[in-house]
Length: 316
Image (cartoon, rainbow, N blue to C red; front, side, top):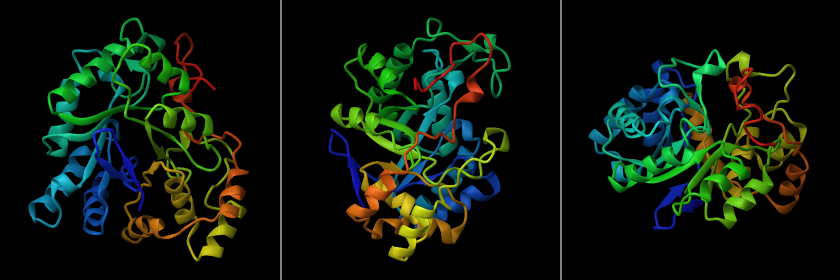
């Protein structure tokens, strides 16, 4: 399996276990299965609402000695209601407590969006948002840097940041984000963003690599296209004796990004990790490259309320 390398020499296994949408009653066992079968990379977030259960799974595996904590890369994310500078480190400490960890390997600003700290769930009116003047991203970022200096996290980065938002942040700091986690798959290949990140030493993680078909109905478009049923992907899968999901995961890994497919099914968890064993040839990669038409499954429309400043959050 490919590994992503960081400036200090730390490495990250490209294929990890995603936990978005993993139900509380199943995610503990999913984490245990993943770690027992060779995963060294677990991706979490406070807003997923299941970090306590993820932590229970990791704690059980670490306690029985099958896997050491220092051999597992754990990522989590700062939610939008904790962007004010006084809230960043307390939010991180809550995540560490839930995950039963002393430190994170990577902590990300989940979105370039700030909510009023009193908001529960998602905003209902524009007044529930904080403007960039009320919660400047650079102030949030400076608290992330402090967290790293305090040893609470080893690496810091962002998620869902466009090239423009990366440039805006980088213009105000010498501490460039070490990771940008974004939606990436054959329908949304983001070549310009990948090129920009590569040139600036920013690693990239692909989320929703299989199309996130199990996300809530209110987040779905009518008649949205299926990646897993795409004829080109199905054809390439048959050619290699693989599943369509394995081809999609391998495509992300082969491009040099990390990739975090979510599953709570034991066989699927194992199958996803086995994606590393395949190799896509030049013809495969060219055929997949032709599938790109800038289609997003996670549109960001849930942030768009009349009167707020978060329309077109991706700067497309």
